[in-house]
Length: 327
Image (cartoon, rainbow, N blue to C red; front, top):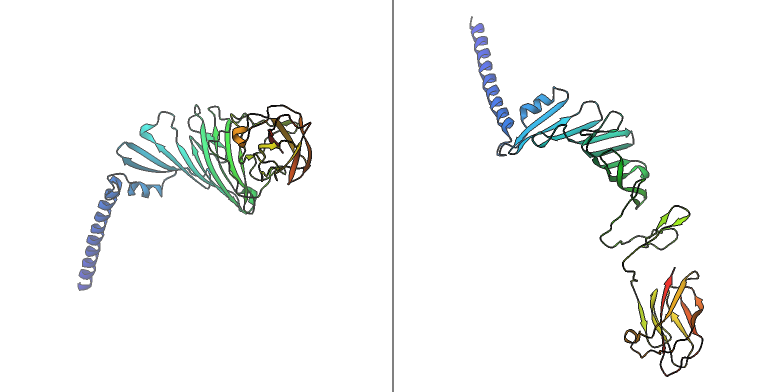
């Protein structure tokens, strides 16, 4: 009898303890269902989280001051795919966004953030609102350099790829930056294009902007103003112009030649000359106003070129000329 009584007391005690714990757990869960403690009602409910472990698809709902939002885990479409919706501000159909993780193979994985679309089981984009376009931000990681890439893309309202920007690994410490689609592309750069590496573009020095449209038509650069980083001004003859690809020099009175020293000149350079009597202020001299013919009579690559005049101009003033070097 005593043994039965002890077992009954133990059972009743355990029941009371479980009831107390259950009551506390319910109160705690209700607290979280209304919002994280101290969070002003903006948290995701614990009861919804528990439901998420049991139901498919999984839906988390959280209230805030402006409405209700949902976080959905789509079942079986991809390795992992989260769908974010804002129910209070959405028209019908919804325009949700998706964050996806995909293992394309054992050595390639990627993450993709998509506005107004998600990936189906064949990794194709499916729009929520088919009257609207969509855009993506993606990043892929791989054991192969060329498959390590990141970028963004925009699609028009008829789901056509309209713009693409990507950055892809091309080797150790190097990458390829690409913009454009098969259609017309406009690149609007609002700042300087700088180069800190040693890569070349078609054999041209690093830092140059190379333009090429196809194999038979050269690209065209159009600008409001063209300039060079350095510009030479030497009014003393035997011009020392360092590496300047453009500048102004003089042929001294009584002479018919001047050597312009600049490392910008190459064996393939086109050197343009302009006889210009208005350069007095720039050169600090009084320029000769009598015109004579001039030409480039010699060059040494990476060193200098020589300007020759057809005659010594009359009057005792130097001949003033400007030069510019292309290529």
